[in-house]
Image 1 (cartoon, rainbow, N blue to C red):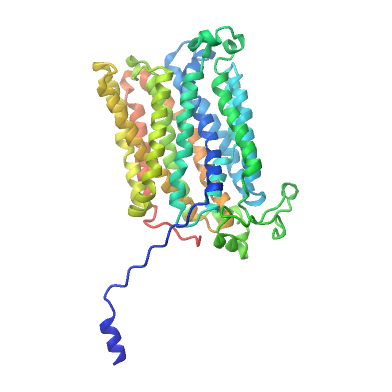
Image 2 (cartoon, rainbow, N blue to C red):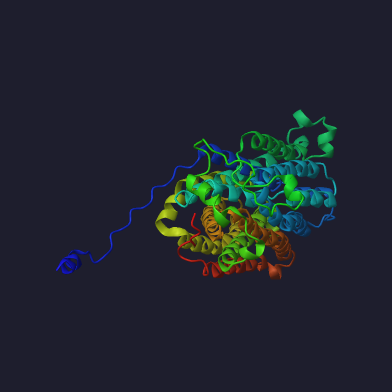
Length: 492
């Protein structure tokens, strides 16, 4: 009778589980990480407005305008090729010796390489300085691991929503600085007209800003950033090959502050196998490969788009571009950076809570097709109307579509964090993902800009670059089919 009573009163549908409250972000350490992330986009985007003119100035193209894009893409590609050779090693090292030493090395590498870049007057000097920056800089994956270290499943999406703020800040300020401070003798003759040094090195001021910022970020890291790896070995022991020993007697775990690691993460990392980074072979599981593959597909499309866009803006109208000068290009990229950062901050976390990672990621990838199509439309309208209001409206539409495309990054970062087999292997998992990204980014700029150069050389192949980029979108959409609707559970 009691069983019948229970059955009759039991609701047909189980009660909805109460949504877990979002854990507050540890703002002190989180804001420092965001500040440090500005260094890389600042250093990479500062050269975007003047890169085509720089290639013309050093004379490697011998006046052939159609070859400018090829050499610009090669210069970008060698950075990522060098990064591909080292990024996994930096990420795995950070799991053993801690995130902070690796970040310090990366910031120092950016500062030195930017100084070398601005003092280079030959193409080999330019590519060697960019390769140095790529080889020494493993910060991209390490900082993402650090963000995972200080968050949990309830606030990870919120944390990644703020990540575009750092990249947008660098992407905004960088092009402005590059456009404003490049060739200062020509732009500000009353101030710099008598400087023989700036006549010899016309891009020194533009590159000195990110070099100085990276040096400042190094000081901030050294003084204020707290380590997030609770059990680690010293650099000396690691170099002597003794990191396989028990590391539970290593450095103490940060405690006693609202900015320290969450209790559950710290306890879990201190117990059992979760406290030990797994070997590389144990990380090559299907979910890590799927997440890394999607990250690589997204990055290949994005880097192709980011490299072709300023080239398209700078290319003369009769060759298929818009014929804009560096300050105009810098202003466009800067406006995009501001709006994109604000859009991600205010909308991504709520959109993610409502629709989930899979729907947002798939929609963002699909937005790549209309984004690419706006390029030939822009040139066609500009040929008829000049730089009319309609042209600027289409530029605005292109920027809005690329903001939707950028939503995919925060989603894939969440998938990568969830794919890690244990918390102690976040760095290595991010490193695997970043390795794939560095490889495709080494291929992407050269292939995209070469296709662009071929498109403007031969009118019969004018749409080749756009076919190529749409094919990249289709690859990304296909790869997204393997992502689960709900992120994998890694017991974070």
